[in-house]
Length: 343
Image (cartoon, rainbow, N blue to C red; front, top):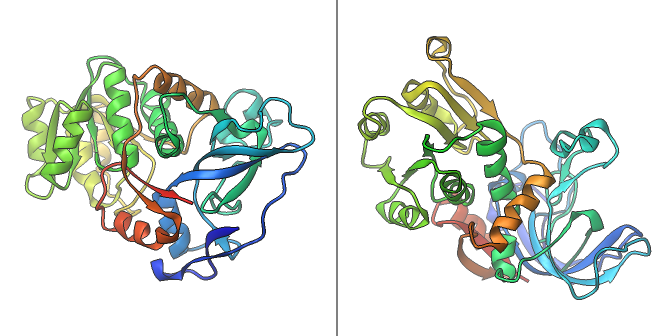
């Protein structure tokens, strides 16, 4: 079969579309014929290499996977051959205290399929645990299904689990054109919040408005802090949905309302941020981190997808053989929503 692998870290040119052995499912695994795989910034970081993180090479990326079941391990009983499946990306032990409490994203053995140690779905086929298989709602095609798991799971964890978002609150969504940003806009509106989208172009802000954003800030042409104060009557926002990092924190934290929460899941613009601690105690501000989310929350997201209350946003699809071009587009922030590869 064909797969996209990298044998060394570097730019998009290290990605190779090549022949690899066909996988065989273990007793508790399901074999999928991959129909679509969506890319994330994690794919970029893995390809480039992370200081202090060893990635087994050669590596197949791709964490957001949708496909058709073509074979079952001998112990599988729930999933059927021919079923349309999206893959829950969290690989856990299923036995530790965290897993049994339903906090599986805190499992001591937690890994992401397509992450640091486990190969992903940038291939014609993949074998995954049966427990990671979620039936795709009828209203979603394969590319749309692949655009769901990581982004919506992470955004749900950030806004619902961590920030405890309430109806009527103001939410500032940074990077509104990203996959996780498009998910955050919709989840915030689902819970009755007012959404202020932040993006680099007016075109992205217009598309964010189509998803439900109530206002927008173009950080390339407008002063972020000044616009937040204007749009909130100098009160500040209740929640900052943040996955950018870097120097933005210096503008964001002073513009949180009393009791406000900044929740973050990434650092695409830099992993060092300055914090004026006086704002934290004088306004009772919380800084919250979020990593992935609970499988139960992904099932809740899929239920809302089936009811049409949430929808994945696919910017474009490309052949799997053009994976390197997809990486370039993500690095250039040239997409709105998800870029999906089709084997």
